[in-house]
Length: 319
Image (tube, rainbow, N blue to C red; front, top):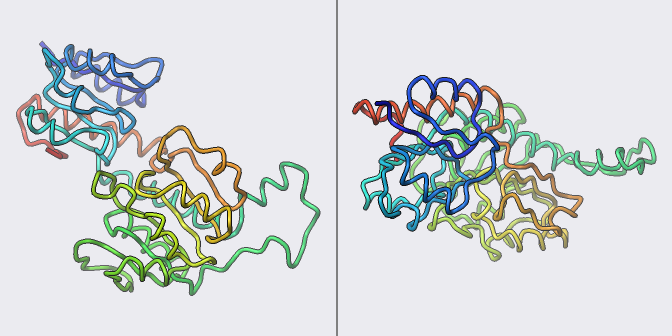
């Protein structure tokens, strides 16, 4: 008999069709997030779960009585939504979908970079609200990127790719902070082992580190205060890495020039005072949201499941 898989969210049609060929599958047709009860029931009914980063699979879920699930295939790179320690203790395999979303996420970081430095959101809002008073030589000016310094926090695949694009496409100087050595860069970049120095020296700061307990509130209120008043802040990684309340206050007081955000602490709930700011571009967590990328991610999750049940090497095993 084919293994039974429960899928917690709607997937691209091509991925769902392939899953149906290979497994007994229960799909989430209404695309609403599973609550605690549904996740507990899934652990008892399925051999494997294909979940997303929005599914919070903690200790209680993983230790469900009469658990049947042996593998959790996460649709996404980050796995901070899963209690990995408990999963390991209970011999539950966890996989993810790396590599295929790098350029799509860098595209969104680039969009945010241009939007905040050229005041695109504010300008569009003026047009849509009928408040544009006409062409001006001095009003609503942005900044040139050429010759400016971008500070990259986290030089993994996405951080490195975005740094390369900022350098080669826009002529920006690159500083970076990373916890492990970085070699074989295809562009000129200088390391700062002191994060405060990077924050102080950068005209644009872009965050590309993973979430998790070690990185929660990594950019604290005190650290955010190191950013120059003329600098811009971009986050396409995870919301809980940043003290969102402190960032909002700094933006409101113009102690930071602007921000471009694709992630938030309590998604999909974005605080009213953050949404009200004119110097912020806000996107609804669409870093990997292209048809091609989501299909590739789905096929990677499928490949991880197939390898596990065929007892072959799992391509993207986390634990």
